[in-house]
Amino acid sequence: MWLTESLCLWVPLRYIRDLDGALKDANQDHERRAVWISETMDGLFILNGNLDLEGGAILRTALAAVEGKPVAGDTRTARERRADAMVDLARHRLDVGDLPTSGCQRPHLTVTAELEVLAGKVPGAGLLNWEQLVPAETLRRLSCDCSVTPIVLGPDGEPLSVGRARRTIPAPMRRAIMMRDRHCRFPGCDRPVTWTDGHHLQHWIDGGPTAYWNVWLLCRKHHRDVHEGGWQLELTSNGSLSAIPP
Image (cartoon, rainbow, N blue to C red; front, side, top):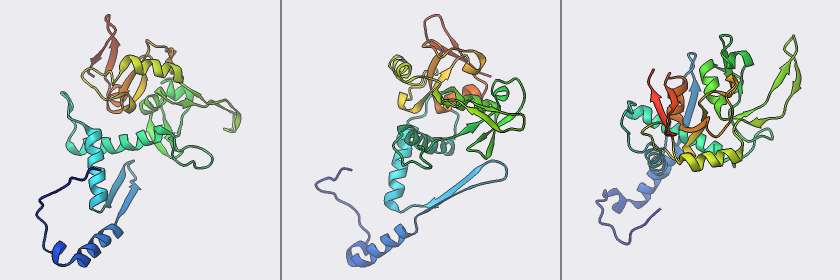
């Protein structure tokens, strides 16, 4: 926060003649702060709430910074860009890994799916945080860059064994990829590496190796465009990526 030495401001009279009243109003606005988030029957979350002037200014400034300037080809509306920016803020905060633990675990998303569904061998869906159904292609995107814990089930669905969780992209390889890519590698995008996921050109569930040449950084918007949106990425002869629309 920056404070200037002198400011010439137009100030409403109530901030001059009724200081106690103006402070009381500000405190009342602060006491009205609240956020509501609820899930609808058709799989949407409804978000609304109230913030005081300071809280609202902080959130709007943060969202504007995350949104950045629209790039060529970005067809999202202003509302969609704000929604994506808010989710990016939350994901970035989770990725830092210093939030308080819950149930002896760091807060994170949990995706549960059958191996055949993830591989596209049978139709189906998976569970997000144990309760929300998500399509198979969303499962593939979320599993592109995650920790995987294999669980073997018996004929009645009871867990028989649980393997050790492992990162699909090891930390040393991720650092090398970040140094190579520097930003989202979808053509025309320059989102910084801290706002990207690792994307397997050939998914690991399909036999694609977690190798330097097969993993590229994509921002969350373009990662979704490639999976759920039907875009395809191809490695060119000069070592860059080309994007093929659906």
